[in-house]
Image (cartoon, rainbow over the protein chains, first blue to last red):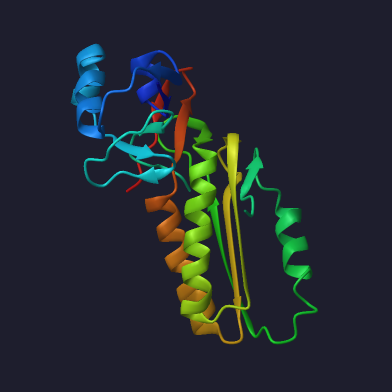
Length: 76
Length: 138
């Protein structure tokens, strides 16, 4: 099981800011699974963080990982 | 890890107090301060900030570790609001201090740019007609 934290405008799409998800392998396959369940996600820009680090490439997700869905930052 | 988050607006008295606290650091010759203020754009009355706090603090720690030696800073302080901040109020306070002005100013500018680009913080603009829109950094 992985925990998915959802931030900013993306939580309007998932209707929740925290999802528990069965383990899916890697960040690319997770993206696909998420976009199948929430088709609106495929129309917006977002990055993934794995255990608080931005996932730049496809990354393996270990059981218990904390994944975050991050829309473009707008601090300051 | 040093916290940077403040609930609500950053009071101007807090800024004055922060400056005062540096008077005993006698090697400082220059301070540079950046203050971000919530701007009244097309009906915006407030911005509500949220963050992935744990990741933001790790990123900020990393930025601090790089910037302090790069510019030879004596010290550096960063505060960012969470929650609601009305237009006209302050939401970001970056304070860099060094022996000489050029280092303090260049460091301050780089830190502000990196905060905007690298910290997972989001602003939801609250409009006067009760609708919302998500802020976009330019």
